Image (cartoon, rainbow, N blue to C red; front, side, top):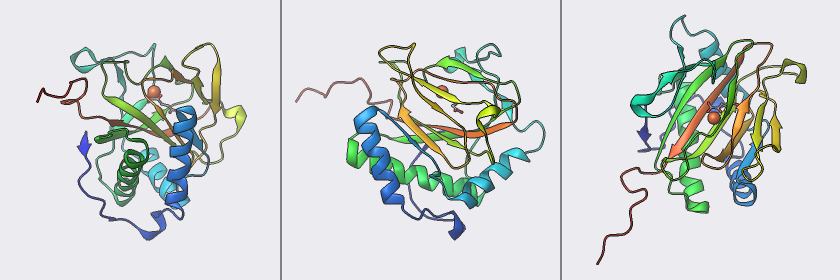
Length: 229
Ligand SMILES: O=C(O)CCC(=O)C(=O)O
Ligand SMILES: [Fe+2]
C-alpha cells in the first residue's frame, strides 16, 4: 500500500505522458510555496484520466470497499463521516503505473524545490455514489502524522456545477472561511499540505470518481532530533 519510490521507469502507453510536466510541477511548487495548496484544471493527460476512470467505473462489484476513518487499529467504517468506497492503486495496469510514475516525479521535484522530505506515496481510487459525502476533516493530525502532502485527481467526464460534489478547502486560521470550492472535473488536480487544510466533499447527484493520495515523510525519522555528536 505504501510504496517507497524506487524507480521512475515509464512502463506506460505514450499517450499517458505529460506534455509539459516541468511547467505543471513548477506551477504546483509555486502555489504550495505561496498558499499551501494548488488547484490545476486539466493537469492530467486526457487518455490517462479516462483510462483510470474506466478502471474504477467498471471494477467488479465488491472490489471497492467502504472507506474507514481513524488511525491504525482504531480504523472503523463510519458512514456518518464518509460514504465513499475505495480501491488502493498498486500498479495493476499501465494507467496505474503511469499515475504512480507521475507521483514519483512529483515527489522528487517537490522535494528538490521545497525540501518537503517526501518519502513514500500511497493512493486509492474513490467512488462517491449519488448522495455520498466526506464531512470536514484533516488528512493528518498535526504533530503526530507523517502524511505531509495530499493529492486529489478527478476522473469525471462532463461535470457541471449542478451536479454538486465540490471539494471545499477551508482556511487553516478561520475554519469557517472557504478558501476554494473545486469542481471534480476530469483531469484536474488538487495538492495541499495535509496537516493544514480542513476540507470536505459535498454530496453529488451523480457518481463521482477520483483518486486520493498522500505523500508521507519517513515515520522512523519524523519528530526525532539529530543524534548528539
Ligand atoms: O475527493 C476529494 O475531493 C477529496 C477526498 C478526501 O478528502 C480524502 O479522501 O481524504
Ligand atoms: Fe481528505
